[in-house]
Length: 136
Image 1 (cartoon, rainbow, N blue to C red):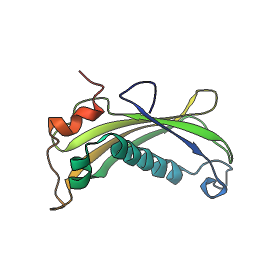
Image 2 (cartoon, rainbow, N blue to C red):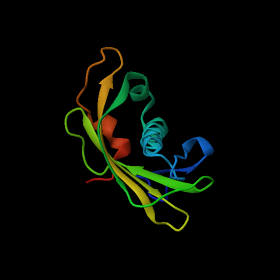
Image 3 (spheres, helix red, strand yellow):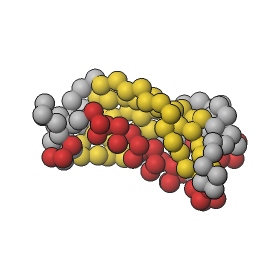
Image 4 (cartoon, rainbow, N blue to C red):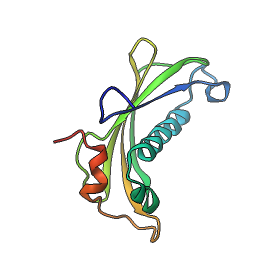
């Protein structure tokens, strides 16, 4: 966890399989890392009954690439939910910072909560959203 109780952090180190022909982390890898930290945040913070009943599906990614990361470099990913849910959807913010603290990749993503039993989207209830709440 980050120093803020509403944000979640995780370090990631670029391995040879993450590097593209330009010598830095491939764009598809960043998308995977966004999904990985979102999943880790859900698993770390969500109530057990919610983890058993629901799964999340991405409906939108908006990613800004502001820098490069080479093999062996580590970035710190920080994620949080910046605003209340809308129906079945939550927006999520993910920032990746290099060793100097500079944001090299930032993303705003939208996720829909899916009922595992039916495979259908469900409205996010306040008790499910509460552990992720930085918003007033």
